[in-house]
Length: 153
Image (cartoon, rainbow, N blue to C red):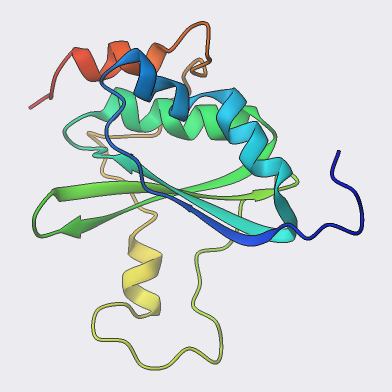
């Protein structure tokens, strides 16, 4: 438990290499996300780069399930990244309530992102629906097996 006098984080951005080895799989585990969640301030947000829900859907939804399994509310979303294709993320917050995907009222006008684009980012096509999966852990890095299966078409 963190001492009340210590400050945590309002936001944590997790952008890691693909979990295609056991060593990297540890970073996509309940234990890692649990430690990260403990470092968040009340109301703090965490976002995890989670791979492609199109090309590697098992690994993507495993990440969503693993983050959720530590008690964080999750909002999965995806966007088109020109150099990667359809790429997914998990936005999470403490407390089990999924965070809203919304722009702050005082956000400046942005080139790419607006409210309709952000709203559509949480919609997944019928051929890539949400999957509930067993979480990945240090002693059972299921996500590594998902990545080793290779990309789906």
